[in-house]
Amino acid sequence: MREKFLIFENVRQAIIICVVLLLGFGLGNNLSASYARSEMMTGSQYFFTLRYVLYSVVGLLCMLFVGSRFDYHRLLSPRFLKLSGTGTILLLMLVRVAGRVVNGSRRWLGAGPVSFQPSELAKVVAILIAAGFLGEYLRRGQRISLLHWPKAAPLAFALAASGLVLIQPDMGTAAIILGLMLYMYIIAGIPKGQVLSIFIVGLAGAAGIAVLAPYRLNRLKVWLDPFIDPQGAGYQMVQAKLAIGSGGLFGMHWGQGTSKFFYLPEAHTDFAFAVFCQEWGFLGALVLICLFALLAGAFYRLAIRTQDRKGFLLTCGCSFLIIGQSVANMAMVAGLLPVIGVPLMFISYGGTSLVINFFCIGLILSVYRLEAAREIREERMAAGLPPEDRNGLRVVHRGEDGRRGR
Image (cartoon, rainbow, N blue to C red; front, side, top):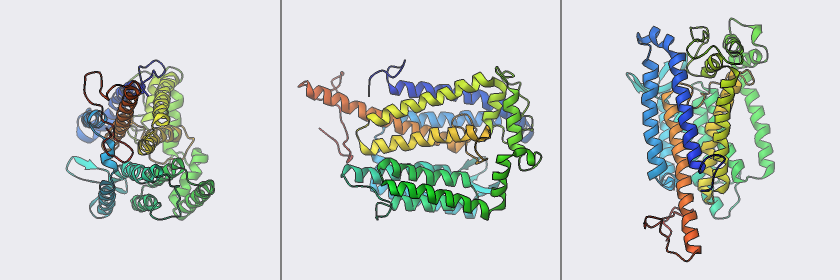
């Protein structure tokens, strides 16, 4: 756990450096991609950038606190998980009554300049519920199954949450919530027959939802060939391809991209990667992809070394949320996936999602800290020494049941 990871001193250092670099890229890209739209909407070129900085500061503080001071087991207690799950469902229901409507979708709660997207919270709550409940069954040596209650309780939460998000409508986020939960079940070790059933039912369900909603079916058609309607349903994808292609090898240089001048919709949010490619070119995009790959490698190293079942599931879930959404966004912008409306982690503008990302990083760092403490304690006990750290402070390790070890 504490050994070197590539050129870094340890996994923790690699994660922090990658996050800081991604945040720097995100700040620069947000400033360039949003200033035209920001000036048109608010009269200030820096409205969205200042909000990005504000949410980043809040997120960083959250990450540092959770990662260095907080024990993630506190969030995995049955009482907290039931309260957080119930609260999230109530917030999603409240969106239907008092939510803000933006671009035809009712997804936000808030007042004045402050807004909050409960569907983003539902993602991390789904991870916590799965890690807490399924991790406890794994600790007891019990097999996980989707067909046995209460082992299927986390899936029930995901189905309820994704259903409420789907009617906002937001099919992309609904699919992520349900997909996250099913991924957690697969990682927890459900039978292979149930895994196969998940894929079959998932494909059938996606096809059914697409057919029932004509605009979703139209998205699939323009995904296969966006030029059949370049000024209508295929406009976003066509403009994204043009922006990426015009960047060439070295890009137009920062701030010089033209797609953000109202050619490319959502240039600072869902399609921020297209602006990045146009201004930084293929080499810049390659650097960004390598950073995400490096971050994924660090997450994987931590997950396979984690002995606490709950910590293992928590790390896997948070990793899948961060890396999975990033891959999906880049694939969407490049035309490899239909337009599904997911952000690129740390690069796309979005207050709630940015804070949630940092919170997930903090949870992963908390897992690392407690696992490193466990290793130190075991090494000292094997050497016949008291379980104290280098400064003479007692190393406290919480076992998989969340109780303090001695």
